[in-house]
Length: 116
Length: 113
Image 1 (cartoon, each protein chain N blue to C red):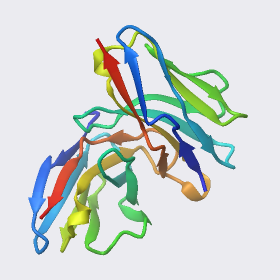
Image 2 (image 1 turned 60 degrees about the vertical axis):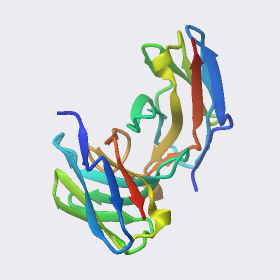
Image 3 (image 1 turned 120 degrees about the horizontal axis):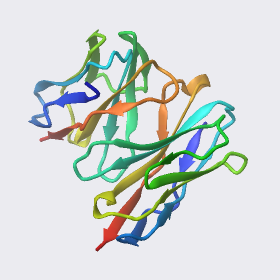
């Protein structure tokens, strides 16, 4: 079965600084997607960034970038120039074909606090 | 329209009540999902509909009954719930059942008293 592990229950960062959130996953599939979702207290699950496993280039979305290490099954999220609005719960998630077709598997989440 | 709309946003119901949650999208997505989320926990998949047909039921108790009347609408009918069913219920959609492209609604906060 596929699993997603986020080893940091909580992280904090100073405004304008950089923070990295860790995620590892376990799978036997060769074709899959990885995601980082942000869930603020408003509850909306917001897609931050997406990475297709077949792409070697790391995805980037403005201040958010990933370090995708396929062989190590690692998928970390770097937030640059942190802003107060980045404070939220962050979930790493995995999606593949095969027997898990259409199912998103989430990690346990990391609560990010941003200090002014 | 790039949103998934869920109603109501909050719902309080007794254990003998019958209520329904509604989810709507107009993005032309053909796969829709129900997730249950407890506080400070990740969402857990409940049901998947693909082309209006139930594709996945994650062994959810029968007191939860999903319905997909058309490609834009997904309902979750609730009956005889227990207090432990209190949670945030999230709806999501994707172009097809498969890889990537999920859009989530903002959820219904359900409290069972």
